[in-house]
Image (tube, rainbow, N blue to C red; front, side, top):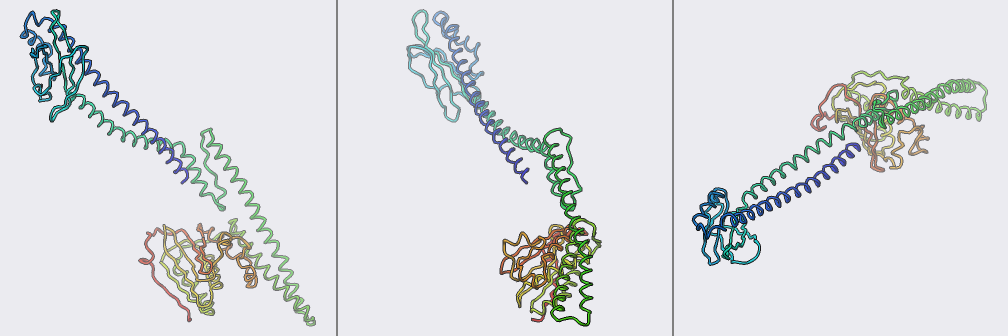
Length: 487
């Protein structure tokens, strides 16, 4: 998840920077093209006005306005080329004026006449009704005889607007496509370099205490990724050696303690058979035997945990129906519930799992026994099974005293007892839940506890299903089977 989040942040930053760059580039391109087209049009109008003055208007007094008009039409064809040309003498006489351009882009009769002035050329803009703006250029001209003229050239800005409109459309269409392609490409480019790290993370998640013999794949990249994989494999190897040593030590100690405890118990029992024995000595021997029995149970539990953890005491999984197992456990323990007037309920969904039935019975008996033990008189204990996310789920819930929040992370620790005084008085050594967890782990499952102090506890076991089963709501698939004690 963290790699995905990092990749998403990098791609987002990359796409954001690219979007900003494209916006700057698009704005620069748009306004640059706009300025270039406008400047080109201005230069064109200026050049036409100057050429008309020096080429045709300079000879107007000698050859007449008709000749000049014919030459302008032949040279520029204003109506066809989309240009406006008008030549006015200082007395207001219009010597030549082009007509409307094709498609009605320029309505020549609606263009106003400027006042005569001295100096250089001037640009002005006029908007015609229902049409684009007209850019006009006025250039004063004086003939050799001293006659003043005003040469006007103009053109519609519609072609420029069409070019700019097309450019806007291209930018608005191309920018999102480029950003989408950049996002997809960025995801791909980020995924490929990080794929070895993702593979390492996924494989590392599957390396557990029971699978430390596995090693992470080492990519032949000759870079930091390869060194990281090698370092992690060396660390796993060290952890495997340490855990193996710890398991062997626990198993060896437990095994070695069984023999002297058995000898001590036998000798003390032989002493108790003596016909003449003071009562004080008899009481001491009986108390010692009781403690030896308790130590023997602890040793047996430690040995069972060590053998399960190391895989020596392997389980024998066979297909079994969870609902049948739950019913059997409730029937075996309902007498304990009746003694405390506790209501027991079982709600199960038929489903098949691969389990060692004897071991799983041990798990459920331990959990339900604890639930009954720590549930007040008149309470309720429920055993529920259902399917969730292709896993078989078994839940044991009660309305008991609950577990303090500070103790919840340690309930599966060896020798941990939330209520040490009462647990010791009842014979508990804090190994029952450790054995339960070891059995669940050996089945490839998991166990978790949720508890609210003073309200009750829920223990959840998840086991892999033996056969594919579709996930459905429990209320619509499970069969309600209730066993209620006499209360």
